[in-house]
Image 1 (tube, rainbow, N blue to C red):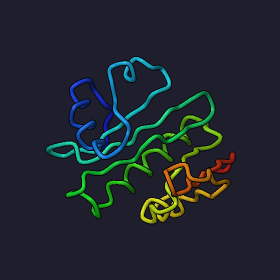
Image 2 (image 1 turned 90 degrees about the horizontal axis):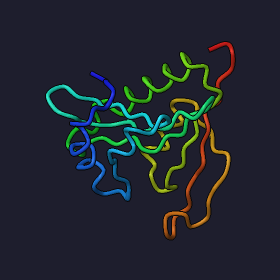
Image 3 (image 1 turned 45 degrees about the vertical axis):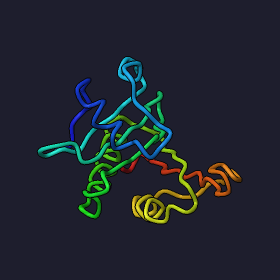
Image 4 (image 1 turned 120 degrees about the vertical axis):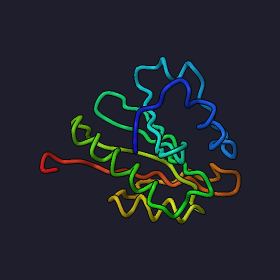
Length: 139
């Protein structure tokens, strides 16, 4: 089940984000552009964190607990986001991903994201790939 974040989810999401430099705080929940949904059954297995700023979306993170991977959770979160974007007349979704994260890049390409640029050495010695998914009126 995919649902919106609530204040009781913050610790569980931050536990999943522990290997990143990212952390959710109460101030995020008060930000009108911040969006976060979680995938859960008995417990939170993954999260999609993004910002909906006017007519565009920027993905901050899609993260799935390590022991829950390969169960289509990230795909389900992406399908939620694409549906959300269409319903809200979003022009595009952007993101950046580590060039070495082949699993994430494969996921984004599956959902018609295209590479538009690179940020040299953004992740230390690895480049960041900037990707975009554009929407048109026919979707």
